[in-house]
Amino acid sequence: MEQPAHFAAYIGLDWSDAKHDLCLVDAATGSRERAVIKQTPEALNEWARSLRTRFRGEHVAVCLEQSRGPVIYALMKYDFLVLYPVNPKTLARFREAFTPSRAKDDPQDAEYLVELLLHHRERLRTWVPDDEQTRTLQLLVEHRRRLVGDQTRISNRLTSLLKGYFPQVLQWFPDMRTEMVCDFLLRWPELSALKRVRREALLKFFRAHNSVRRDTLETRLRAIKGATPLVTDRAVITSSVLMVKALVAQMRTTLAAVRDFDSQIAELCQVHEDFDLFVSLPGAGRVYASRLLAAMGANRERWQSADELLRFSGVAPVIERSGKSSWTRWRYFCPKFFRQSFVEYAGESVRHSEWAKAFYLSQKAKGKSHQAAVRALAYKWIRIIWKCWRTRTKYDEARYLECLRKKGSALVSTAV
Image (cartoon, rainbow, N blue to C red; front, side, top):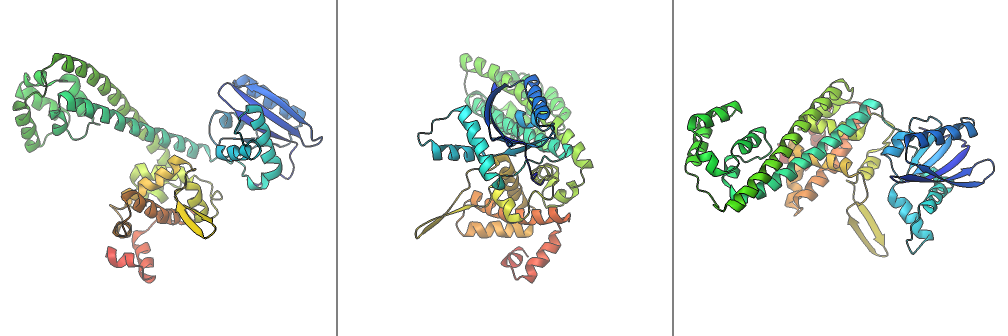
């Protein structure tokens, strides 16, 4: 979106949960006005309507600290407002330039935001939201990833608890994040209750949960029959059983929620015109393809070059120089989920792409840690993904290997 040539007013908005502090500069008179708006739909709507009337529907620039959240969502419905979100660290550094004591005051922050808008607007970008379909997908994949993180946390707590009184479950079921484990622990949360169950009842339970391999069933049944309790203290067992039931209930709810999100994400991806581009990436599958699609979005003008995308994602390192010294460090401030999507996909691609595996092994041979090697691989993948996305071209592993071969890349000989 091109910046309008003229604004009727400039606004700095410092938002919070309960209220928003504003500083408005009238472009015609240069006068400054301070105001406070309550964080309610009615108050925001009344304020926006009064602005439209006062400035006769002309464009009004608004600078604020976020690119997602309730204020952005509330203001995006007013077409005359042009939003300029800035990184909170940008405002913090700007504030420290004039307030070395680091004293913070919301009305003053609103003035600093409008100063950024008045004097450095050419360095700021207007906020241009993706289409509704893509924005829905972006929110769905982020919420799903948080639920997967919840599964891991619950699983870790469950594992720690079982180690203290019923460790055999961890041997019988290597993954705690399944419906079968949840149902098993709800029915038999302690060993003494399990050992009283007949063989036929156990076989019926496992088969009802699609565990039908004969050798696996026999191994589990023998292990259950010969199991010895770790503790016999009823105080430990009683309290642990109650906690296990609570954790299992949380796990079941989380598993069901992830399935619901998967269903919604699958429906959106099926009709999204760019999904085929991302699902063509080796190892992307439905999960990583949807996350990469959500990260890149649908606006082809958002990233003018792969380097710009690399810097924004946080995958590109930061080079610092002072005098004769120069060093490279991790990029601290970036969209964390955005970076996580590319790095996690890069780690998965090692199992599915010949050149990606060769590159990863070459980085490990240089003494790099696993995470450093995966980040370096993500750096290369982002350049490839950006080109495919910009040109609307599906990824072709054979074609890319041929390009590497023509360039004489060592990755080809290693991969082949």
